[in-house]
Length: 230
Image (cartoon, rainbow, N blue to C red):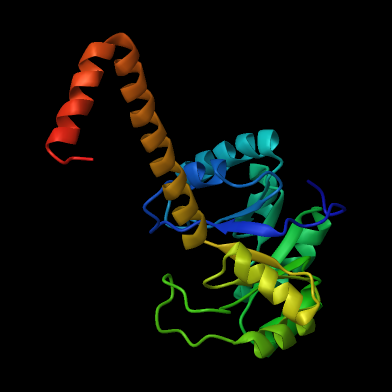
């Protein structure tokens, strides 16, 4: 993906505290989604290998992968773009020169103005709602979020307790096209999908057992009815 293409409207933010591997979460994303790979605590070699796994997945699912860090590393490792922290906003010119997609986090008006000066393609404005990853942090609320998002200038992406339903409500209420990003929402979705798959597998095994031994299946059914287990 190049800077000429539109940004994804839904994003996964990686979190080392997540109970589920980011590569597994990425595999459950809808095609065309985006990923911001953080995992700053990993050794450089392990972090590079994780990024490469995500980039291979991105080619089959049309994902956009940004590396949180510095532009030179993002370019060298083959990421689609770079997610700069506010303290590194002065490196924006390097990201542009390297042809990388550039995004920044934004939490207030000062950071929004900095993102506008950096000409960020996307701005992750947060926190809109309470979030498990940052308990107790005051939320912006819809009015403040909208004001900051407009001030930042780039494609606004709502972060903090977000779900697809909340993103639709936000867009309808404010007549603004906004993306959304999450950690927990994707993890919960993947967990539900795994639970459904396990349930379907159990039902399939029961059906196969019934086909192999229909007499035993009938006896088991009668026994459960007799003892009130249905």
